Image (spheres, rainbow, N blue to C red):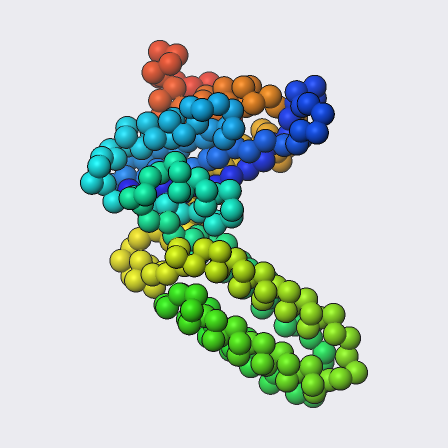
Length: 268
């Protein structure tokens, strides 16, 4: 069984916050994929009540999770979601860092190379930077964080040599890439145990990305709560809407209404 999870923040409805309280609350959304009983989308207001954790666990049981079920959790590895993995899904689960978020950070570094100081040797140095970064990415894909550390060192050496060749250039570009490399390194080491086995998992046809969860988040949350309407919500109101939206996505709305057809305006 594979569970992809992601978090999103929604604005409080005016008048529903106390002095000193944050103006946003978190919704945890995800999708369960099980080989035998299909899958389900879910979404809970994380700190609404003590039942959020129980609701997610009940969905897993409904999808067929038992004591011996192999469970893999995919997330973007941020601090809050790592805590959820450790407390909501039990110790007998494997957490894998979403490759999409890793690759996106590497792509940002790759684009930065285009703005480094230009000279007669720029194309040659640019090709070397890209080759070093791709080598680091390959090490991460195949061997994990420890080997990728060597790749990052090669990238830094190449940048140092580039900077020495252009002492007159502004150092901001080099510092920007160094900062992104440092952020990537911290991100990977924070999720060190979850950054491994991508190559083998991909060859075995296993899921390594939470892209399908991004789509679920858009369906459940972003259209009505974030991107389009920009309205505020109470925790209870948001949870009630999420119950309806997940029931529609999972094809279970008729169990609550008795109607097998869903009006187009509600489904939208």
